[in-house]
Length: 395
Image 1 (cartoon, rainbow, N blue to C red):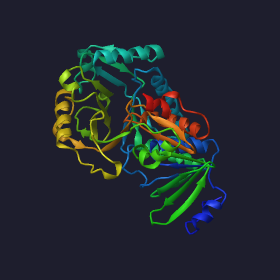
Image 2 (cartoon, rainbow, N blue to C red):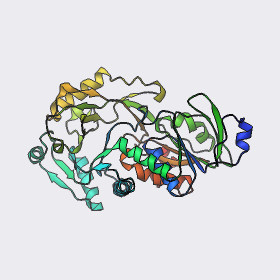
Image 3 (tube, rainbow, N blue to C red):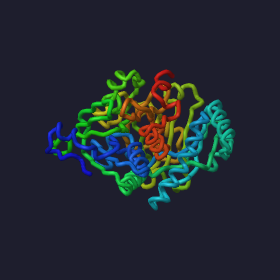
Image 4 (cartoon, rainbow, N blue to C red):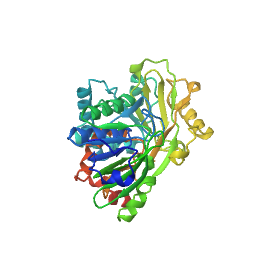
């Protein structure tokens, strides 16, 4: 069956038998993974994305993302292990290399490192703890603060390739993709959802479906906040910020760069940034960024321009702590964070809508696992308690 023609009236369209079981709104990593999981289960899936394929307007663009297992909470550590297995399965299915295990270095605040190490020990994740001189000898591009916690099941995801692999897998299992198609209106009913879509040429169509997945990150409040309040399950606050990491050139070989996270022990630096992350993007340089320090924006009103203050903080940090790069080669990047007060994800239902938001710059590594969880939510299996609306809102 096919979608009602844009030429049909809304009344005619909504009266027709639904052509799909689920509409997934958003084709970033979370939407692509969810569409893939649903399609692989045999469901009929339509994916609609407001922007062009591979766009840079959201949180999923760019060539690389960190994969690491370094969390203090046992459930997150377990999820990284499950995600690792799912990334490898996606590689096998699509025949693409998506995850390069370069290892990861966490350094800085001993209390944070001790908590991560304890979580590793409980989970059986292999790791080492190195003195600064030993770690710097191994990774001369970094200056190490207090000590280094190292684990091998970490590195970088080829993020753009990963999204394409998920979308291609979804299509191979029967999903339909529509880019430059905007969700203009959403009505949630006892029977499901009614969506008014607008295509690139301005033509509109109305789709009736049993389930809609809003994998929209920073746009979640715009699309579903009123519905959530009416349902008695309001969304938590989601702070949307325009972050500004940057790439820096390095003369060191690619293999000299692990992924890394620094939790500063110096109070002066800690008052400016809670943590700093980095990894190599082959062909572009070493990406370094401060975590969650960007200015608050509406996702439709970004200027993509770095601030002088943010650039100064990043340059000063890199000059001191990343001696293996050329600080004057800075090439800024712009991305969005969508962050709940706890930095936990929201993966839950509001009536016929499954909502996904709050990924706070650390969601990409869980990509295919998030798809599995959200496909479950959309078909009646609740997400883990941590990610439900009541739990996140109450935290």
